[in-house]
Image (cartoon, rainbow over all chains, first blue to last red; front, side, top):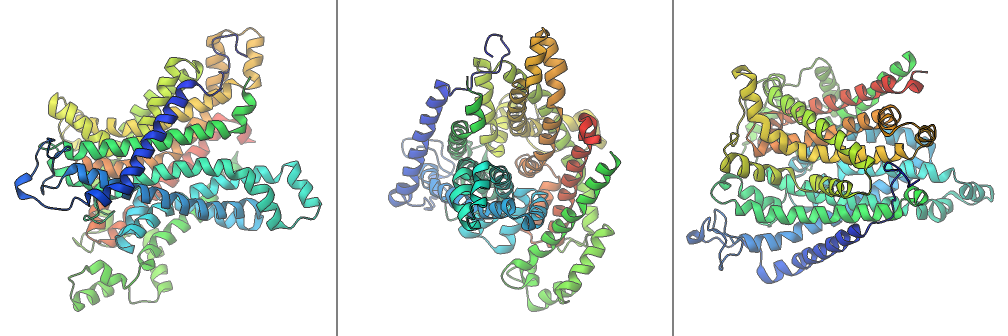
Amino acid sequence: MSATSVAAPSLRRPEWLNLSASLSLSFLFIIFVMAILGPMFLGNGNELNSTMRLKPPSAEAWFGTDNLGRDVFVRTVSGARNSVVVGLCTAVLVLLIGGLLGVIAGYFRWADMVLMRFADGLMAIPGILLAIALVSILGGGLVTVIIAISVPEIPRTARLLRSVVLTIRELPFVMASVSLGSSTPKIIVQHILPNAVGALMVQTTYVCAAAVLSEAALSFLGVGTPPDVPSWGNVIASGKDYFRLAPWIIAFPGIMLSILVLSINILGDQLRDQLDPRLTKRRP
Amino acid sequence: MQSFIIKRLLSVIPVVFIVLTTVFLLLHIGPGDPAALIAGENASRTQIEEIRQRLMLDRPLLEQFLIYLRNVTSLNFGESVYSGFPVGMLILQRVEPTALLALYTMTISVLISIPMGVWAAWRAGTTLDRTLVIASVIGFSVPVFVIGYALVDLFALRLRWFPVQGYKPLSGGFLASVTSLTLPAVTLAFLFSALLARITRATMLEVLSEDYIRTARAKGARNGRVLIVHALKNIGVPVVTVIGTSFAALLGGVVITESVFNIPGMGRLTVDAILNRDYPVVQGVLITFSFVLIGINLLVDLSYALFDPRVRQ
């Protein structure tokens, strides 16, 4: 299989991927530390200072200042908390609800039709639009933002888990358990779920990355996190009208945001490559 | 073939119904009085009552829903609370830049990502493949607004190749219009081509490990023939599917990109309507975007019949 130049490639985990995975983990660690310690030691960076407006990066303000004289460094470091909280909470919420609905749809034929039609319907509305509409109706705030971002993600996760469960339930050991008279909850908990964990974990990392992006997009559009809580999307939005004069307001939180999402996605890819049984099977 | 098409057309009905119901219920799931929500914080009691009357929010929920369904089926989305103009007209005025931006992005992305994805899979494991894999992860990890501002900074402010922001309508000439949309389209193409290239590569890898590829090689077919006759023919269906399903992500990206580049399209219309609590406009735009998505996915599914003879039977 490996003789010619176009043979199916060796899908063994290459070295560089491990390098990028450990880099990602380090970045995630740094961002976690920022999220925990930033607001404790630096505050929220809401202090206005009219003599320090739109100043470029300097020894005093490492990342420069915004149009209200707020320190972009402080707001960027403390803004990590918002992204981390939204990312994790959304991931857990989507994992629980989407996972539950996916198992129900995959295991119980009667629920499948109804649930999947609902999933199709929700997925037909562009996610970010549904989220901004939800925030505007439910009112701003952290919890609303998390709910609004979760709603469009749930059908996708449910759909994925349903297809995984559909495959697992036809496997011989599940059949065997059924014929031995195991109860349905026991089959689901003991046989289906453990075999679906891998797919769920991978999906959860991707949801987490998507949630961080969506929160930033909502805040950027002015319908996300309230302005007094620093969030990377907020800070970028505050630099929107000044980006010719003061590109640093957008640049620093933008770079942090990109690094965070990239790190989560790389870890997701790594996890997928390790857990995907089809890749393992194809390994020479 | 006919029964496949009819079945697929019928399957649109429940999806459309659920979209319409969701969009209708959005206003009613919030805490408090929808009329007060639309009127805003500083509205007087009479203003709130006036909105309640105008949007018929004083009727029973079921009656409101039936009126709404009747209106939507006759493409009547009501009037903007904010400006008083019919929502349908407001949307039609904004369609051009959004449709052009989506098409432009799609064209760039398909031209770049599909050859790249195929090539990366063909040369899997090489430096070229690794570079492309990393580039595509970066492409869909960096937020569109960050890419947008970076491109504006480089190509508009420093190099002055393109206008910084704004949109020139088609009536002022096709070339001027396309030039004004080039930076926004390239911005979005980063995201979209990253998604497409990733899926194309994965699909191509799968196809290359199929038995029929091995058979073709065993017969002594040359590389070029294996690629074109045996492999490319079989990535059509999955790749078209992904173009269809990731169109939702594209529309989401359009909304954000229009804000970055100050393009007066449907995305701006939505965001402005939401900030103004102009609910009939929000409903109208959500329904329009959803119908576009449903239509595209319908076309994608119907195109299976073209690519895959098994579907026709």
